[in-house]
Every structure is written in C-alpha cells, then in structure tokens.
Length: 364
Image (cartoon, rainbow, N blue to C red):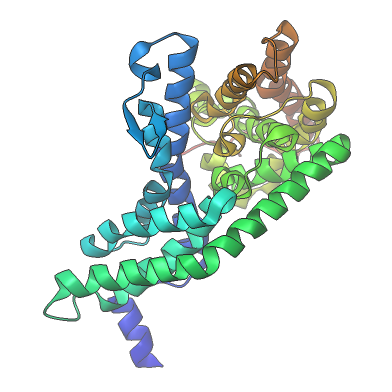
C-alpha cells in the first residue's frame, strides 16, 4: 500500500475533493467560458451592432457555416478538457492529448457534453500521468494511452452521462415551470451558494444545461450573492471590494464565511426573495448559453446571457422585441433588489450582533 501511495505521489495524482471537485470543476468552467461563452458573446455583439467581421461566415465545415464566434463555441470540448488537464497538473504530452479526449467526450455526450467531459477528462488525464515518462518511448506511449483511454471511455460512458445530465436538467426546468415560486427559491438559493463556495456554479449549470425559467432563477441567485456581498462589505472593503466581488467573485469571502458563517445569511436570504421574483413576476429566462446561468454578475456574464437569449429568441421568432418590462426586470433582479434586500438583512443581523465590523474584511 505504501508503494502505491508513493507512486501516486510521484505522479502527482491526488485523489481528493479539492483536486477533482474544486480545481478540476473550476478549470472546466474557465475552459467553457473561453470557448462557448466567448463565442456566444461575439455572435451577440456582431448581430446587435451589425459588425460584418463577426457575422460573416469564416469557414464551412460539413455543410455548416461558422462565424468567429461559432468556431470558438465549437471548441468547447477540447477547451474544457485542456483546462481540466491543466488543473490536474498534467505533463505536457498528457495535457496536449486532452484536446482529442475533450472533443470525443463532448461530441458523444450530446446535450450533457460538459458533464461527460468532466468525468472522462479526469480518467484520461490520470491514466496518462500514470505512464508518463515511464518508458524510453514516452513521446509515443503517453499520448497513445491518454487518447485511447479517453476515447474508449467516451464511447462507453459519455452517451449515458449525457442522457442522465439532460434528464436531471430537464427535471429541474420542468419543476421550475410547474412550481415557479418554490423552485425559484430552491434553484436561486442553491446556485447562489454554489457560486460562493469553491466549486463552479457555472460548470454545474453548463453540465445540467440549465436554461429557461430555471436558468433565470440561477442568474438571480448568483447575482444576489455577488452583489449582496459587494454592498454589505462596502464599509470594510471600499470601492475595490465592491468591484472585486460585484463583477469578480463572491468566493473571496469564503475565508470570512468559515470564521463567521452568519455573514452569509444576508445574500442567501436575498437570493431566496429574488429567485421567485424572477420566475413569478418577471418570468426571467436564460435562453443564452447555460454556463451564463451560473456566472452571476461576474463580468456581467449572467445579465449578458439573458440579453443574448432575448436576441436568439427574436431571431427564432419566439419573441417580437425586447420590452421596457424586460429591461426593468433584469435590472431589478440582478442589481437593485439584491442590493436592497442584502443591506436590509445585514442591518438586522448587525443589530442582533450576529455580524460585526470587520467580519467581511478582505485581505489586501
């Protein structure tokens, strides 16, 4: 047993929640962001502002026309796998082989491609690391093992993983459509919590394909966490903290949450209110890329995703135009209401002595 542990340590294979549940999942979200989401944003900008460079066909592959954004989006599988390999500290030959693995897993995973890429990339990466530099023909052995393991595993488990992810995502979206008030609370609160925890709410939303009304609730919850922490910690962190949390990440508060979990209550309660407001009053839907549902106000990706969804619906004939009610709802749900409710709850908790000055101070 000791020899096995020593060998795994030598190969930098760490079987832990942090390595797989935090590092790999977070990296996957970044890979998805840099491919699918950036491609979606470029397409939206090109369409909205009639930018020829972004709307014209750059390449036609197997009868499908691709714009710059389209090509970027098409590389989401390889981008996710490469990012996961990087997070798992793969040697170069393993890392570069992950491109093929990601393409296969994403293609075979269908609508649940991101979840398939996540599991299969971990398996292929660790298999590649096991044999890396163990032979004199490493340049052949390592890529072959990584690619073959990745593609064989993809062929076996990617389709069922994809179907399972699609099924679960559809259940959540169906339940939200059926019970928008209750599910608006549940989805908003839990996705908001996932956003602040050191896991990736964006990757979770992408893996489940969380769009529609459930996606709108997720946007509400994630925005409530980021905007909430940004405003209630303003007295401790000033404008720098407002920006770093408001359009950066509320994850910066995790250290403080561990010290005093009660500081988390205000943003959580705010998300419990804004979620059903989004679903029941404004019928806010995320019809853009599913990853946007879990991004909140990070780079304003969440609201931008809703906006690109509106444009997509207009193109498909599902929506005639973007109304003033749409804009008001988006502004209230993503910015105004999280600010108001978080400040109210924080005021109450400070009066009760649950939250004290300096509890949310960020290290400079």
